Image 1 (tube, one colour):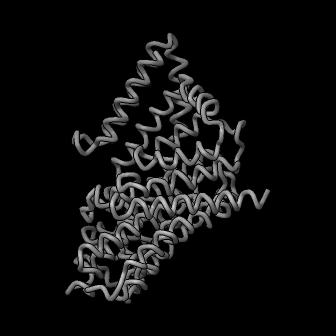
Image 2: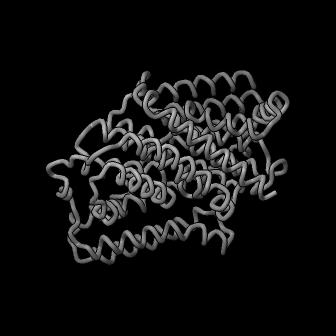
Length: 427
């Protein structure tokens, strides 16, 4: 039974990794893999009722992550629908390349912590198209956005899916992850930014239509500012809500979404249904990345099947025996996330190591949050932010390896060194 489930999981994982060559959406593959793994477990374990109970338990844990992501994505889509991000992008006026490197790096780093690395990358790449005409320059800036977005997401409980998973899973707390990983994440962004800025000389050439807003630009400044402010506050309120009530984070994000829903209904109450529809929550819900939600569901359920069979516990024991050093293990997991999607990697690690072994806030979990969040920057396909940038700017895989990968590696190990130094000075 265990062998059969492992084979199905490996084949499914290979199909997910080769999504573009095989031309099958990874969400579809993940869902089929999950269904087959649990079906085999139920049929071959000899106790279908016990398997169903375990599945229900895993689904209860997973649903918290999915509802959180759906709420956060919808809030971001509402802000975007009201052109709220124009408040940020309209303030970037400089054309000096070196100044622009630092401006883009820091805006991306902090915005990613509040939103998430994927959304921030999409927003910033759209911005770069408006302010940089040269393709080669724009690709370098886009690569910087990927590194900075992944670094910014690593130190925030809502900035990266994997960090959110660890937070919801009880492995880290919002306060500790910010305190322990902020400086390492900053270092992993600063080193590549310094090296990229040294290559930049002169001024960027702006496109002819750089100062023109989009076709659907929302001219109502009050609406833009109100929705942007409420949306950002809703996202920032989630850690506070969890601390005060001790309820799961998805309750905080759903509360914030409900408040935004009421506000947007009120400010658009005087418009006709067709015009109001573009700014409604219903429209935002249709625009969120539903395939990604289903991918997370499928891959997390597949990991749950491996956990139910005891495979992950055995793997943890084997890694401890063969490698032994938890720091080396975590660094390896981070680099592996550049090749393999970090969501299933972190999900697997959560199943491999228990809170009894490494309690909440342990060095291992916080270092894992840093490594899994920033390690994906080493390859363009190693993170959701990288894949989005690759699609938007048509960045070639080997161009990124040649020009950027070594910068990301330098930043990754610099941040890891800062993390370990910080940890050993505190103990």
